[in-house]
Image (cartoon, rainbow, N blue to C red):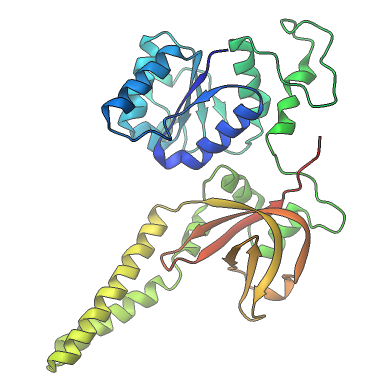
Length: 326
């Protein structure tokens, strides 16, 4: 079986890894350049060779991918090699994320529904590469030939391998209930699943930004008015430190990185300033009604978070994540 060449922007590496993991779980061979050192001659040769030997070409589309010189080169070389190109839209819209040469090509949209990876992408790849879908363990293959459209159920079997969110267990709150407790919306949860972030969540990263700006201005005027050299030097150091914090806070706002972690959940910190402990990660809560947060929660969860300039991890959304045993 030939491999699938997966083209992506480095800024989309988290969603790329998730797609690669699910394709591999479905029994497909996937090639990426993640473990190669970019810019080296061996890296370029490896990319050319991988495209030439690939069975098809999957490109992850986003505004960053559209601006990427190497995604454009890989796409051009795959076209020259006559490969089947399958675009997967993960962020942005048709205008900001889709290159001109792919504008009229049918694509798979997983921006708001990641299940399309199992429902559309994996079956499309199986059909193109002539691969029989992997059955669930303990379940027989359909009796019909793979070439017939009848075994539709076997096409959706990779869903069990993609580690999609599961239903809550007894005593475990649903995603809707968690949204009410932790102050996010279901639309924001869908964005976070695709490693994207809403405008409201983005603004939460700018904690104490304007306070830092005011302190910076006060210190600046104080430094100009004071004539004591030692005191001026101390204030100048403080100015530099606060300036770096403001700059890094602004960078975190402009280029947020959504991360996820799975595990058991419990409340830590004080009642006035509670935090959420997910496995070994402590997450800050931007919520008004802190009394809604329980001490512990049944089952396992997947939490999405972003990091502020202070190195603090801020909870964006959370959902039940109980692995189903085959």
